[in-house]
Amino acid sequence: MNQQTLLLHQVLQTLLRGRFPVFLSGKEIISFLRMIISQPTIAFLSLQKRFGIKILRAASKPEGGVDVEDLKRLMNQHSPTLVSLTHVPSNTGLIQPVEEVGKLCEERNIYYLVDACQSVGQIPVDLEKIRCDFLSGTFRKFLRGPRGAGFLYVSDKIIHQKLEPLFIDMRGADWISG
Image 1: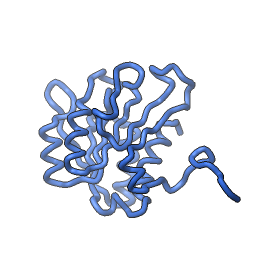
Image 2 (image 1 turned 120 degrees about the vertical axis):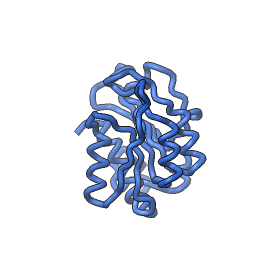
Image 3 (image 1 turned 60 degrees about the vertical axis):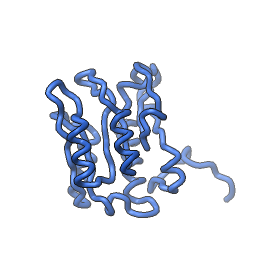
Image 4 (image 1 turned 45 degrees about the vertical axis):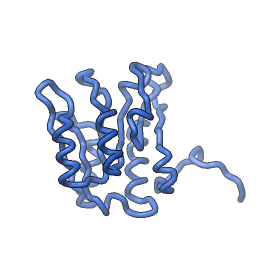
């Protein structure tokens, strides 16, 4: 299992097993998935099978990329728990409108996950403008780091809600007493 997969699983665990079962309250995820089977796709399909969570897919524009108007319609119609978007898909190089989507999610209080593996280190990534709750990246691509190393940004909103993953490793907390 690669680092990016582990980061995605941490996000999904957090939303599934936090202080309250976030997914079980909304039960819907919007993901912009086209014809690619990616790690988020596999994880979301697993959630669908195990927990009955509905996966909604926003349409794509004729020139490629997420159709923001269709995404907005889905958000208004279904009030999903999570929106997931890849900033720069590896197979096209297209730059998705992550800032515009972030604004829509923030206005509707929908959790927002951005996969920035192809964008971090290659183009500017401004977390304040993107307004995401989670952003994952890898060091091995444009940051020129070692294979298997990555990072997960978690917003203050998530921290203040005291949402946390089901499992953390020995580097996920400081031991302060025995």
